[in-house]
Amino acid sequence: MPSLSEFLQASAAHHKHLCPRQVLGVRMGMRAALELGLDLPQTNKRLYAFVETDGCLVDGVIAATGCNVGRRTLQIVDFGKVAATFVDTTTGTAIRIFPHPDARQTAPLFAPGERDRWHAQLAGYQAMPDEALLVVQPVELSVSMAAIISRPGVRTACAQCGEEIINEREVVRGGIVLCRACAGESYYRLREGAAVTAQG
Image (cartoon, rainbow, N blue to C red):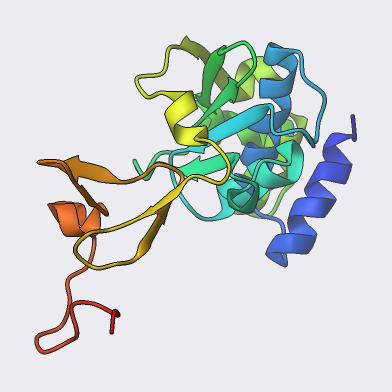
């Protein structure tokens, strides 16, 4: 497995700089691999990550684990928390990892002489032992990994808007197949006067 320094270099290259939350993301991913007995970075889609915020933390998790949205091995569940749950999709074992509540205050003790709090966290998070930096919780998922992963090649079309639906994300209402948006679960709405369908 690559070293912490190598993972941080990869994260910084992608993110254009290195910040404390990237360090946390890398350390969380490395600890997850240790807890689950997996090698990093993953190349076979066995490890899946639910990350509870967007931004810098995600880039750290990606750099360490190899999990990412494009490979369908990472999902952002936006709770606004610096936390992630890592799942071994072969065994179903899941662990949630987040920074120790005292990590910010403890970091300067591991980075004496840093010029400000931000730099103390950046250096301290790299030097702190896992036990001082991270909390690991064994968890059980309330969602189905089989449903999240789905099956390759499965697709259908929404009876209302006509758009293709992949990964078994359709909703069936009264025997009619709908996309989640047309079923009322949309994060957007059409502007007044916009075409409802692209058909025709």
